[in-house]
Image (cartoon, rainbow over all chains, first blue to last red; front, side, top):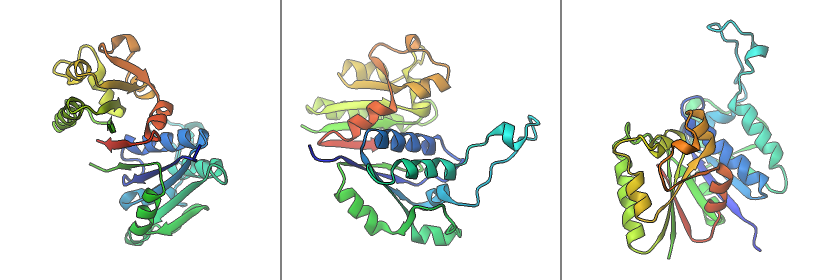
Length: 135
Length: 109
């Protein structure tokens, strides 16, 4: 049986929409099934992998950073890249122009820079493509 | 025959264009296609029996497969028994299986 490959296009920035969490759940589930995954992060989604994200305390509840265990999207994506480092393979591409606009070039290891042509190539080589728009 | 997979993430009581998704799904089914509607995030609010004006009963009657993400249901305190007839509790695992089926067209809303 031919190997399966799923391409996912993301546009939402982190900490704004439940769609980001759902997308990460879909990517995780696919990798755990042995399905290769391509991610094309567009617009605000390039910030999902920003290295400078930091967990914080919660002054409202009075909890410390450690107690709060605030999850960051960079940590989620890092764990997915670890899960998909060989077979199945997770390829994560950030849109270069979107990165430049946002000054979001300092990202975690394993992420690549690309453009819409990469998204087309990903879609053409995939079993299916899921586009998750902002609106 | 194509398989259309609609992923509805929006609360139909907050997003009036959810009606367009329901109409499109019903029309595709009427034309002989296989159609699945996967409710996720606030989209699961339409799955409740008590959700007046929900498109779900009409879509169930049309023969559309109706799935609701278990995680989204639990997050919103909705138990399986509170869901309309025709709704099947499902998971992101099952959604991935549907996404990689041959000849499936996936539409996120």
